[in-house]
Amino acid sequence: MRVLILATDIYTRGGIARYTATLAATLGEMIGRKNVEVLALLNTGHSGEGPGSFCVLKAVSGRPTWRAKIGYAAESLRAARKRYDLVICSHVALTPIAALIERWFGTPFWVACHDAEVWERISFAKLAALRRAQFALPVSRFTGEKLREINGISGEKIRVVYNAIPDKFADMLLTGNGNASSSARQASGRRTLLSVGSLARVHEYKGFDTVIRALPRLAVEAPDLIYMIAGKGDNQPRLEALARQLGVRNRITFAGRVSDRELAELYHGCDVFVMPSRASRTNGRWHGEGFGRVYVEAALAGKPVVGSTGGGAAEAVLHEKTGLLVDPASASEVSDALSVLLRNPGLAARMGCEGRQWASQIFSQASLRAGLAEVLREGGHLQ
Image (cartoon, rainbow, N blue to C red; front, top):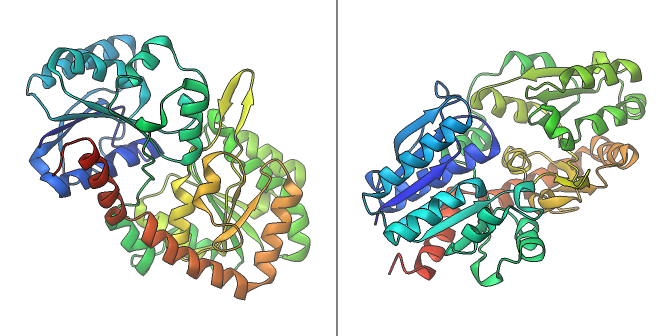
């Protein structure tokens, strides 16, 4: 069996890129590295962490221009002449290309669906192509429900395939190997909250601002408290201004982009992981977290999690077992949940322990292999 994966990108630290790389590597382990080939639109981040058990045919461009997209479509059709057994799109935007391959070469295709790109009515061309797919693979039940309710995709086509944490990074989180980063050392000896994610303005829904609004009240109970944010983006100046306005700027460290090893140390060094991501419709468009693999990463590190009742993020935390779910728009609820965990280290430790066991069982590459094998059998690709 041979598989072609059409990807937006695989080299950056973004959720979709990491999902795609893990999916490709897991398939490569199942059917052989040479049988899984990836064609990526973007080569952004190419100098970072490379692929695992799969082959990269090409990364077409550093920018998603119209010329690059046309070139990518042409490269995809050229690659399809090899007559693959299956094409997988890592994003719904690539679905029309896969549908064209299916029409010309008869190759069935699947489509991974992540978050807001399918939480509202998608374009006619994408929807027509998506309806031709053998399976749609949402990363959460919430996204699967949106596919049915808003875009009319039959439940018979939908198979939820959760994000998996790559074995190598999972081992770092589970074992705690590696040298502490400078940010982790800075946090040493102080009670620490941690958030991880893009600070881009388009990702304001991640809720870093809500955590900052919760800090003044928390600081009264925990004078030694600090808040670490790992990530980078153009919304950082606004967050810094908000922190200064509330008088808590000295409690916040922006760690910027970090390596996997440094990120593992940040998880190990925190007391509570918090990210109250919002899922809402603003100006006619949905924004929100389709799943949130960082909640799972924190759980693997044995940390309790304060997450959100909104969107797919709620599926990455077991309320009152591995963490607490709160109204993501309420700074007081965020503050209350964090206060409970900071005042009750025994409870926090029990939640962290249960979270580690749960995440190891549900979000490992072994679980992903089992899930993919089932879908492959259903599609007639495996006996």
